[in-house]
Length: 138
Ligand SMILES: Cc1cc2nc3c(=O)[nH]c(=O)nc-3n(C[C@H](O)[C@H](O)[C@H](O)COP(=O)(O)O)c2cc1C
Image 1 (cartoon, protein in one colour):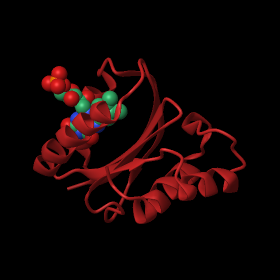
Image 2 (spheres, rainbow, N blue to C red):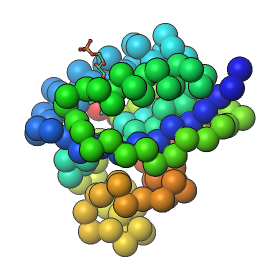
Image 3 (cartoon, rainbow, N blue to C red):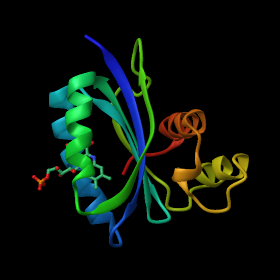
């Protein structure tokens, strides 16, 4: 079965509370593990950056469902690649909230504020991977 990695960015349509983020994450944790999809969601500065990894058909279907969610819009596909094995082996939420590691990563990219739509595919993947290793979950 073909495994893929999909990365996209989007902008929130309204402010997200911690509770809102938790409910998205709870849903992702239970649904995605059933679908054998792993990945990570990052939220900061009214933007989302998400990576989804899994079987091609499941990832495609889930992405279409997520893209239809009224809580965000301006969806931009950053990357869609075939992979041999997943980099993100469980489901995480990298919540920025001004953490030092987050700002260090932004500095490295010479970005003052988090604008994931400006990241190249390689930068977006490195950013998410770094965060997944260093960020505590919410
Ligand atoms: C930024 C963002 C990321 C999301 N990621 C996931 C996800 O990875 N897995 C999932 O099952 N739902 C995810 N959701 C939630 C689904 O879009 C939504 O809950 C799902 O379509 C079900 O809708 P319903 O609650 O109206 O039934 C995400 C939503 C947003 C706004």
